[in-house]
Amino acid sequence: MILTTERLRLVPLQKEHLYFVLEWVKKPRVFHQLMDKLPLSIPGLVTWYSKREKQEDYLLETFNGKSIGLVTLGNIRPDSFNADIDRLIIGDEEYLRDRYASETLKTIVRYAFREKKLKRLFCECYNDNAFFYGMALKVGFRTDRVGPAPDSDRGKIRMSLKNERAN
Image (cartoon, rainbow, N blue to C red):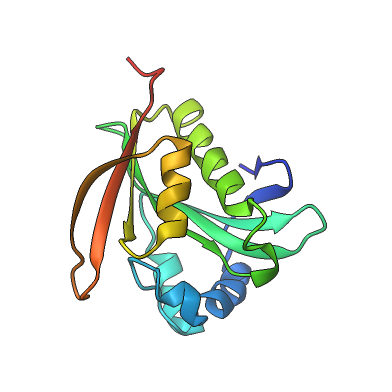
């Protein structure tokens, strides 16, 4: 299923998109903020791609066909109607500061609640990622807890958003 925002298409991730993902995750500003580190090689990404379960990855593409990022609805748990927003990457610097990330976050939240019929979404970020944290709060996420991040000297913020239309 292809999702759309005002200016983007969210296209299901395919193997041929992994070269874009590799290019983005190798950037220090992206790698530094990823809670779950993706492999830094094509063979590693191909292995990761083939083992993905309970998640939907979408390539962010402008209407003129330029690939600019990635978003993942992961750890989808149909039994509890919950999922995680595992990653949201704007890999192309040209698109960093023009609301593409918030457009994407709003779209994946709307999709999760309306189409997937989920009741609650979760996301995490490092406590120094003020951009993502502020954006998540604006979309409606609430802080659940703040604590240490495994394998890091940085703190981690866990947030959740409840589907107000769910019973």
